[in-house]
Length: 57
Figure 1 (spheres, rainbow, N blue to C red):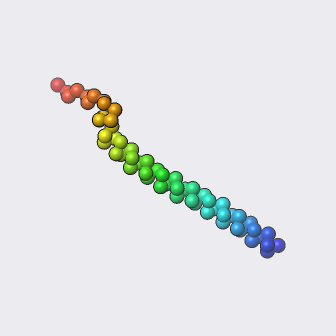
Figure 2 (tube, rainbow, N blue to C red):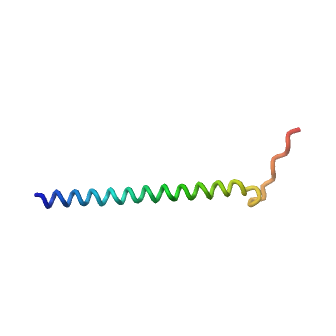
Figure 3 (cartoon, helix red, strand yellow):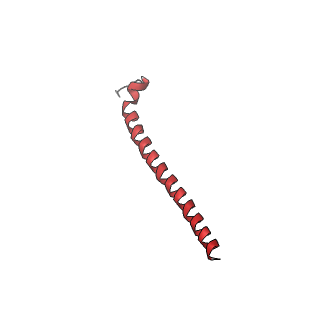
């Protein structure tokens, strides 16, 4: 009985560790994408050749 309970506890801990690792990895990836998006936004008109909006008259 105790062996079966221990197996269930180990499996639960293993699944919890996998979920935690996936969430940490996703958070790290989101932070990296945010930084690259900020850098791209600053350089976007130059990179895309976009024309700046005309000044108001």
